[in-house]
Image (tube, rainbow, N blue to C red; front, top):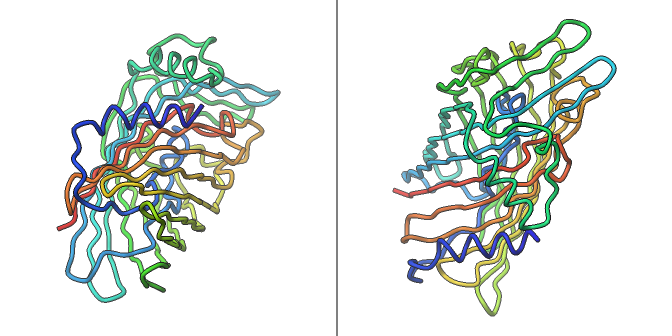
Length: 329
């Protein structure tokens, strides 16, 4: 089912592309973007090969997130119904042979959206479950949570603004023709607004390890990659009485580049629970499968296209559409 979705998406966008340049197989820069998770600065997948010294890599990412879940227990209730858009401008610069610095600056918007019917048709066409969508109205915005202790979260007016900026430093541990590994640390600054769910109101610190192995093939080449990380989550303002202090992250993926201008990729991402809750939306680790690929538009320019589905139902957004344009200077 997922393979059919991937091939349909790639056939639409690759028709005008002429084969000329080899694409790099690198991890999808995806994460859990549910309303209560996107505010945290978790360790996420970074390329194992760093930007060469004196070179700059810029990226512009865009994620469309469709949330549709409704749950309750004896002491808690939650409703995440709406769309969120996250636009991320990122820079990576090699300042020495093995040292890289970086910056990610997001813009976050929460809206009523207009993709509910499209997502329902998408799920129906590929035989995927619709979850709670049949119980919720189309194109509405309500991100709400409450418990018996009086803790609550509520956003039902459209909002947008600068998200929490992330500063990154990475060190190249290993780099040869077939293998690479890097260690990175990041600091998330509270530049967003917790009331609008564009930030957590806290400083977060993460450390992570990324590794990749490439394999030459008779037709193109293949890669496998993975990584893990840990994050200290500062004393924020989003459900502060239930938020965990620490979180672990893990990712693993693989790709195949059969043509110089095309790479096909899949990736699994997960992290530990971010909140002390009996509800899946807050208290369960997510498992996100992203399927898609990379298109080469020139020697220095590429575009990632991916679709993310929640394998652990309700623990992450129902579906996420991911684009990431990268240009190397």
